[in-house]
Image 1 (tube, rainbow, N blue to C red):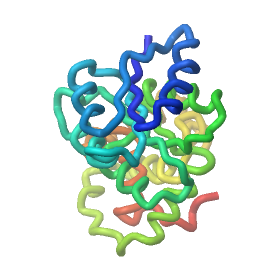
Image 2: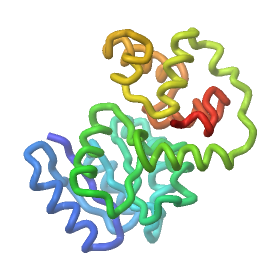
Image 3: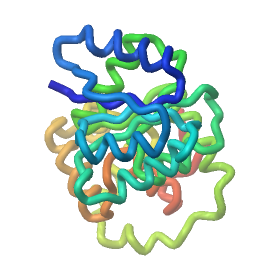
Image 4: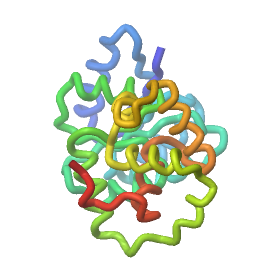
Length: 221
């Protein structure tokens, strides 16, 4: 059973999400929060699998709450999915850098929301295809020049290749087909790369791929 915490200052939004999620046999809403401070407190108390976090809330905004959650070793297994009203929200890229596993626009289709919750629990990030890839590219294009790629020196040539493919939004299955290896082998390469670079999840691996210059925005297809 996947346990979800809803953090949004709008009661009707929370009610709608709760009705949808609680209707699923494999998902349970274990709590709600109306502001970022409450979201942080509830996350510590309940340790849900996923927090659906509105980015604009009183007391503590979703970005600050996400930073605190992902920085807490006790909450290492909690995945944060940012909810935003606008596709081009200036805080979204920073939220992923802070440890969020992805984000969704609030008017997303119900099936997409369910897919997203299940995806982050299984270790995937909301990075392909569609709006997230476009946004990552947009914010990467605005960011400063790539940092020195010193961290990448510890990766094998194949691991760098796999990281670049993750960076352009390919799934493990797509990476496997591209490299003519098994999906399990592709997943192993991705996992080892994350461990070596200290990436919390696939989302942060994508950010590192851009920040190191391994992937450039124009490469998205």
